[in-house]
Image (cartoon, rainbow, N blue to C red; front, side):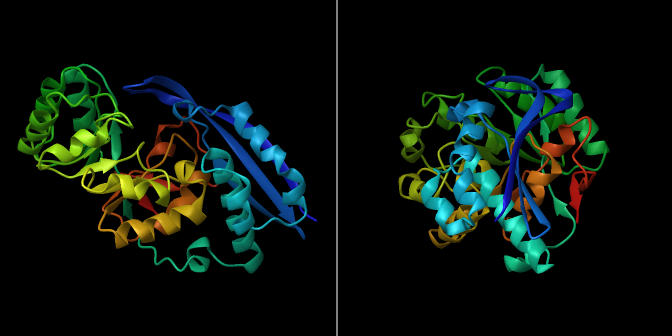
Length: 321
């Protein structure tokens, strides 16, 4: 029999995290701990209101399969019991971690991933006045970050991007609109970003309205985030997106994330690996996906005032393994 423990944690941020949907001052996560024969494995998820998730709803989902978990539920059985999302992610990652620890091997070894260090990760510039965003970008550049993720909403797009590009002319910039744009004027906005040498645009349109992306030739790669959760979504993304952003909280864990990565590559999509606001515990579970992704956006723990131990080593826009 396994013992199962489910609990929530709140991790204050050192700086407010501002995107098109609003501002956050702390990361609230749910942790699952499984113990078997004296060996403990853990997994973490970040419930996300955009997907109608709360701390309480996610914990209730996990508790609903508590008896099966105690009786030895495995990862494949889990896929049929819980839908993709944060709850399944925490359980799935706890099962992977437990398996690795029982085998006395790193997670990368049991997933056959060849990790390299350091992993270059995007550092996020949150929404603000153009001059403030430019200052933030310059500060990140001066700290060593070379890949910057710019959060935008539907306002001051050219002003913000021109100011940022002037401040960091040599940085690799990717832009995330978090579904805040609309189809009207989209092609011209994409051309503006391309003219500023932006490397990628992430999820400009709301889910369900992204058919407009197939109506023009993309002058820069466009990446699906909210529109891509699992392999089941890939068919709808053809001719609309060039990339997909894989996040364990969307796929419902590492099991589906690995399968999604394989299938997306087979269908010609380039890969991005992302995260929510989270601790190093969540990032560690995603590391087997880092080989082969075009962009890694794993800076969630760098926003925390204090990280969960053992904390991963983030320095100068890179994660050192």
